[in-house]
Length: 292
Image 1 (cartoon, one colour):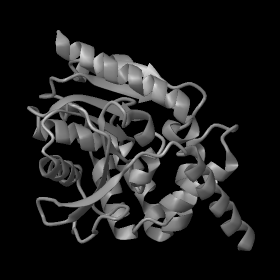
Image 2 (image 1 turned 135 degrees about the vertical axis):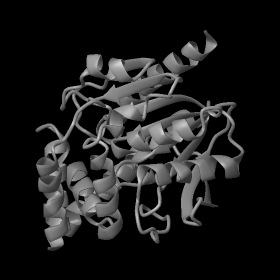
Image 3 (image 1 turned 120 degrees about the vertical axis):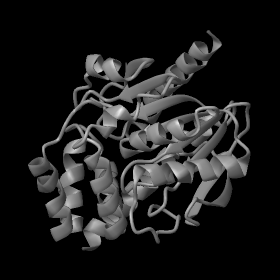
Image 4 (image 1 turned 60 degrees about the horizontal axis):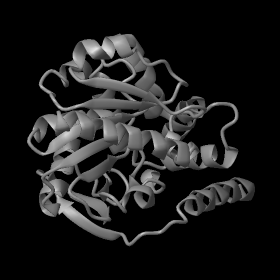
């Protein structure tokens, strides 16, 4: 037990060390549409806000290496969605649509009128919903290791097979779920930290969000979400899982795919410098598209 806790602690210190370039960060709370308290941070300033949305059972800390890298040129916002991090967890259902309302609440409180939304994993579905909700304020969408194939369909049996282990033993299922998300050469301390952190998520909120997110691939909502999205959409993906660029282009009107090499599902933590370079390319691609 002591050894395991030591490894987790080392992983946490490793993460903290990666964010050595500190910038002033302001912490605040916004009230979402259903009065959930949404914790968020703000750093830097600029005419465009970069709003970072974490993935399932994660939180704003997963973007700690991006805040100092981009705060000199942009207003950088990280959000803890309801049921995650320091936000409240009193919802009956944690849906992608309600998570999008969390993003909207923060943007409205901060008076943000021009934003690029950046979402990791499940956060990709959240920012797609947020873009639909605020088409006049969102100028671009960047999915991080997500949108691998928005047209993919999951059979009901597979859906249940994925959910049942989390209902039986959440911590064990989370560990088994996260382990294959990294290449063999990934840093063991980082892998262990992420496994333990995600396994510590509130079970009820996590299960609800998991079911809602996966459910979008049961009925085709994952693809339909992009039907009315006109702004540029960019995937910044790892190569651990294949991305079907052709399938995505059939459903996303303005789509571009960029890769971060030699990482797994968490490129922003595994290789922050390389990831930040590719993210800058994605942001510039969106800004250039909007000039046309």
